Image (cartoon, rainbow, N blue to C red; front, side):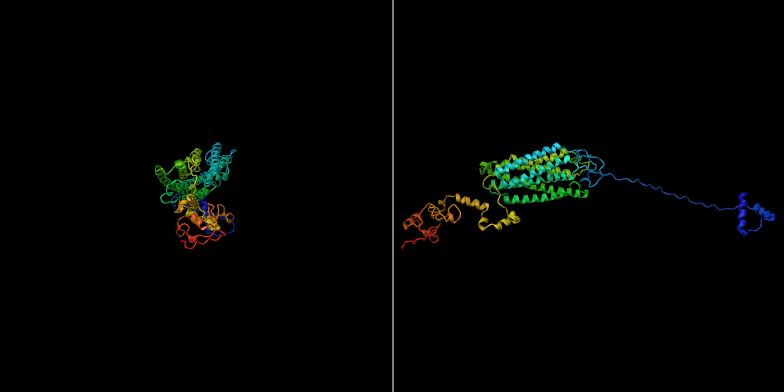
Length: 484
């Protein structure tokens, strides 16, 4: 009822103006009550609203993807936040920030191999001096680089947070085999020049063979140096990946060159066996086998090391590759083969066989064309000095060793009066124009005796018209009526 009364009052207020007049009279109230009794309510038509379906929305919880704080697939992470305190040697567990090794490196093993490479280095230097072989500085450089690499690794085991020390160790150990390769190329070239019957292999001169393979070795060296530097500690993952690929290309080229070179060495081996059956090789040259076998062993050891590096880098640094997580692989497949490749030349040193003429290589056409410093030295020398090459010196030595009587048909030897004695320059001029002390101014009878029975004009070695008077003297005219 109250609600009906409220609605009735509201309708009256809407239909009649609001006034501030007197109160409602009884008749009006009766009328209002009658009208309220007739009010039945307000009818509102119901409206149906279809339900709205809202699909559930899932908001993912913010997460940070997991990653290795110390190494990626191809190298260490460049930046990270270190939360683990390193021990006294700088070691932190693998796959954490600042971990340069995936294992705890052994200080004793690094020192041991550093000492072994140092011993081979000292031995090579002593042997190079003893045998007076200048080209042996190449193998000395290979032993030096391996010694530096292992010495730096020894220091790195005590300073495991230093990327610079580890970078030195990695670069030197990766590039040292190239020196040993170059030494093997030089040894085979000198063996061909010293021992081979024709001093050539497949029409290739020994100096050219050594120069070409050393040049190819330098190209491989540059490629590996670039790749090893890009993949060093502290590089970004992209740069490290590119550097590893470049380095693998460099050692692949190196192994290809070794394979071709071994083919040439086998050809030389077969030629030497044939020469030995013919009795050409005798004396010290009969020791050629030890040099060739040492070359095979050295190149085989380098090949084992190259295969190890190819397997290591091709599989990356993930958990599926056990090589980076075990230090034994490094010493067994890297250090031991290199120690064999260098130490075998201490046992069979080239200087013990390559002694005497032809033991050193003459300059090749490639070195004459490409070596600007050699061209500069040639331009600075006189014409008579430029003629003093190894080949000419050897030819002159053979001529001096011949019997002078074989150069003249009458058996009297060389008739040409020497202008100088064994010294050099006019100050050492021989007072006699003849080696046997004959007179400067011989009489006609003595001249006939000196010059033999053959007429002077028919002398093929020293004809009459070519005779010159001795220094400071005049030549007597032959007597009239003679055939001269």
